Image (tube, rainbow, N blue to C red; front, top):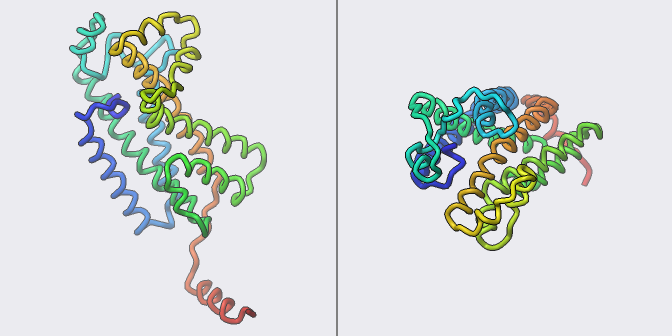
Length: 263
């Protein structure tokens, strides 16, 4: 998938998509703040629908696929020459796949900003923590557990959401750089996904093939983690109750109460 690679060729489109997502989110937060949950819920639903074909493509557990067996969204000529496997030429399907990838990335960024903003509507202090990657997963999990006072059955969903989301962020941004530094958390995925595959060590002996194989492992696990995290986020968002906006009369009453309150 285009946005699951580290190729600098796609850096500019990626930044453009992020910029558009941020602008959309800022517009909603400034002009439609009372409808954050409305837009967020629908954004996640559309994301799950659009992202499903991408998850299905990378899935290793389905024997039937909506994509042709010899289809690849990446450079077919490079793949064919390096792997010896002939990939079919599907320019239309390739464009569809890349378009789904771009739209899903836009919706993902948009949804993340609105989700954090929605959580912050119930928080008075330490709101900045909810914007720090990785840390915000734990801070939001604590807020969901304490502020919203969900039942224990639903807190289990929150814990599972935090675990899946942490894994997605970790493997998306940190796992490969840490692997280069000697901290290996990727090959364990190979053992889980392919327990009977005994050629991993041979692949790792060759720098190009070994590292390519590890990148392919991440391509398999990341879409699944992203999709499950989005599905759990949708369940959480549906459960969250948005506080009604404060009217002018209520604001005056709050001010009077503060003035008349004893010191």
